Length: 150
Image: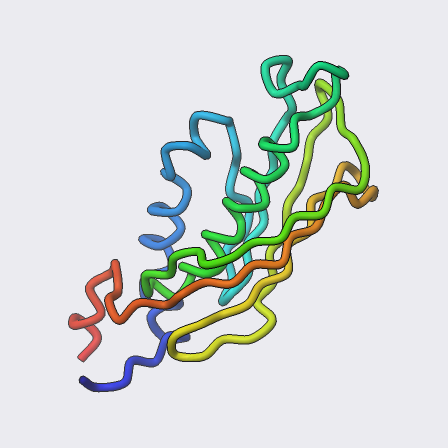
């Protein structure tokens, strides 16, 4: 199999990749908005609603995880190559409340043919609420038509 230049795939199919990631069903259900999608990077925002709160009237940890996981998925799939999560470690540092607008950012730390590692941060304004360290397995297949590039 011929080696594919993933940077060129990202550039050639950027609109398609962005659209696919933007339409992720669970993210849409929660109201997560994909803001940026770079090579191995992504950012998204989410406004906290009442149903996203826990018993203490602060954002439920599952919501913070979902937002972090979404930018992780977007960043790791940003080359058009199918990537699936292997591990995540989440650290919760501060609460958020109803009406807060959260922003999550994912940055690729290292990538090989089969694995890639990411650092994710979740903020409310300038306050760091949570971090995630995450690893993906990178499959052989692409979800955009790379054969058109040949």
